[in-house]
Length: 120
Image 1: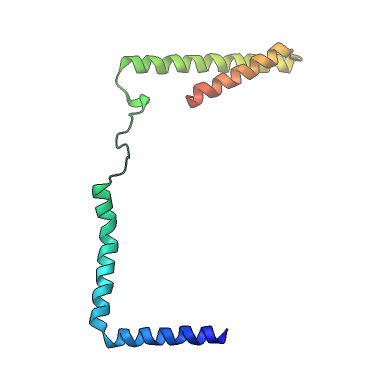
Image 2: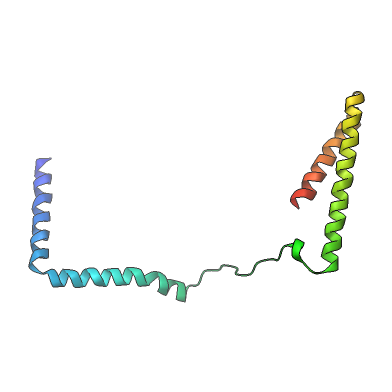
């Protein structure tokens, strides 16, 4: 173990002596390495441009077309109908027990509401 330590210590001292003996050469190599390492990403971007889509979709809320506004109104109307029906089932549950068909309908309405709300 000490032999390896002594070997590495000797190598380090030799490299240090070389650096002290030729500071201009070391500085030149270091600056060249830095310039190349900083310029490589720019060269890579120029010759191999990433495949990024730079366009973005305008949200439907700010769209000017009547068709998209009518689609949004229809979706809002459907959501309102679903919420009203769910509220009717809630009041029915408070008055008495629900049937199996009611439970299935509630689950369907809840999934439909989530679909309309999230858009997928």
